[in-house]
Image (cartoon, rainbow, N blue to C red; front, side, top):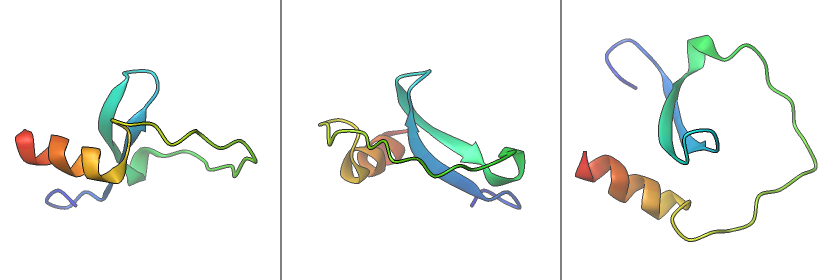
Amino acid sequence: YWGRTWTIGAWCERRTDFRNFRVDRIAGLETLERRYPDEAGKRLADFIRAMEAR
């Protein structure tokens, strides 16, 4: 949550980095069977460390 804007922190495959995505800009959602492998550098603990470092 930033001011009046809700965000979702997640790994961005396009930018190969963590990003905060604005909820009000998400046009749709689709649940898929595909799962991403558990990779070092892309975990919740890594996201928290990255946000604290900024």
